[in-house]
Amino acid sequence: MSDHSTSLYAAREPIFPRRVSGAFRRLKWQIMAITLGIYYVTPWLRWDRGPALPDQAVLVDLAHRRFYFFWIEIWPHEFYFVAGLLIMAGLGLFLFTAALGRVWCGYACPQTVWTDLFLGVERWVEGDRNARLRLHKAPWTARKWRLRLTKWAIWLAISLATGGAWVFYFADAPTLLSDLLTFRAPPVAWTSIAILTATTFVFGGFMREQVCIYMCPWPRIQGAMMDDGTLTVAYREWRGEPRARGLKRHGADMAMTRAAGPQIGGRSPLVPMQFRDMKGVIRSEPSAQDQGAGDCIDCNACVNVCPMGIDIREGQQLACITCALCIDACDEVMEKVGRPRGLIDYLALSDAPRERAGGAPQSLWRHVLRPRNLIYFGLWSAIGIVLLVALFMRPMLELTVSPVRNPTFVTLSDGSIRNAYDVRVRNRLGAVQDVALSLDGSQDLMLEVEGEQAGAVSVQADTQRLIRVYVTAPADAVEARIDRSQISLVVADRATGETASVETTFNGDAS
Image (cartoon, rainbow, N blue to C red; front, side):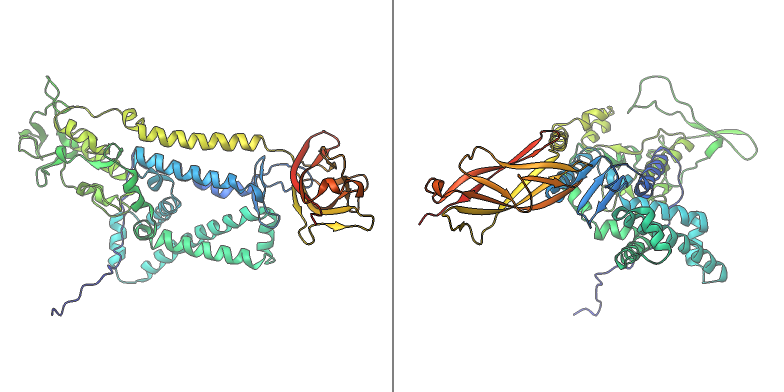
């Protein structure tokens, strides 16, 4: 038996991504600014709904069981709207993953956005990659403590703002802020802020890639969503291998010309490179391609900028979030050594045989507009259209009826039979509604509203009212109401004439 034991846990190796510039890095900054702006600013937007309703544009009012989104108001019994939005979100993830890989993870996922923000703070305080590496390995001196405490303090401030912004979605933001500053806020607000602050601080600062690799289920689900036609970040190994490590590269002093004539593999063949030596004499040497090497010079720029610490040249990996920063880094190097951009790029595996043979890849739209993606988009659109139609066709006046079951009916002294019903009338308008309750097509029955005259009821704005209603069958009509029969209760707005009706059961004496 071996004395050596294998550990199932590998300690985290800190990753210090290098700063990079390029189209995808700019896109990530822009998406970060938009998403963080929406998150932090939205609770402070106002929307006038009338004197009896909250004026916060987006509000999850748990106390009154309402969800407000600008002009839309969702009641508890309309949770199917929320379910529909969740289904649309899931289908949207499937669509984007099938078309472009893990673009959600790379650009818009909250973990990615806050990690990028924390990394920006880290670079600003401690310096770029090499400086942070040296600081990580250095002993704990006064300077290291000062830099780390400064970084952690800024992280904590961002985390506190994140947790604070979240609770503003569940109460009037100005009022809650005043209560927080004067320490009059309820315990649930403090608890929520503390939990969200701690998780943001830890996940964004110390568990960056672990959250994506070990805690998030999406990397495992994405395998079923992607196929060889999906555009994702990948390395053109047929162009980059074998790597030209060790060959001379002369940076800006290197001049390279292209031979006239036919294109090879989408680019012109290279003639021998010329460079200026230290004495200023122009010399020539065989190009890397002439020596049988690929375009990759093994500079590890793609590895150094990766926030997940992976090498994209090793193929598709679970840890890759397709943030495309390796594309920016590689393109920058290719320009310096006089080679075409795109050694690392968004590409589909189905294009590999064509590119190996020197052909051009299929167009972007050929990959995006595939039957699978169109089906996802069709389902997504259909659900969205159904939700919109249901939203705009909602009645402003609604009625629900629940027969009282104990007892199911009462026989009065004159021989008549009476049933009782609990009726809820919902008024969605921002003003008081005066409504009238009646029976539809039941000439032999009489309706009475408890505490009201002539079936008239007043319902306050944006509320529902519970009413006890009695329906009576006179003695001379009892024989026609033996056992059970269907009746219809109707509520009508006296001002607008809008009506709502519900069918229910009248219970008679079957003995």
